[in-house]
Image (tube, rainbow, N blue to C red; front, side, top):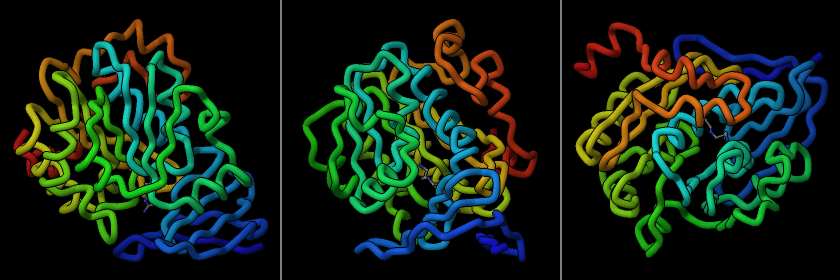
Length: 274
Ligand code: AG3
């Protein structure tokens, strides 16, 4: 039996045993690989980085989406940048939002995932979904629409997605949020993207009215995995409406233990001066 390993630094890797390769292709943007793992379902790999494993993808998508949506008192319009697999979209649509706009750069990712691993479970066909194939940065810079929540489901804070972690980009996102708004981004591994996480946190802190770093163990990535949320206006990340959260079906995200996600290793908390 074969194996697939994603290597991080310092000789650390994340490995799945592989039953077969489903496809390997190259888009304008990246190398795309799909595998059938031995017991964890199918797996999507972009440029050598594991994006999700079917059995475990909700460890990531629930944590990316629900804390941010629940932080907003009345989210109606949500923007997702990236997230071409539809996992984040599926979680967003569990909430009574009116519209979810998704801007994904790589049409091939959307098409392959819909064909071979449809983890969106119908979310792409939901009336509330608007899928735009295009550059998220360009969209944020030019749109006239306003959003309550922006979710950035990008690749890592190294390489081509690096601009999605910059001050300029966060400023542009701030400007298209309504009076009260929340932005959340994945921000790499707690132990393997330390400087990138700190940079994203500090960039967001400069442009937003409040910022929170949080983490959760994700299977498929090097756990724990970091997230950063930026707040605009009158929203409170620490005191969500627990009753509202409990109405949403989740396996990992626990609205009754929401604040426990704010635990960061001591060295990280101290570096962030919080
Ligand atoms: N989000 C990808 C998270 C980054 C994974 N990084 C890694 N394996 N090095 C996009 C895919 C999930 N919708």
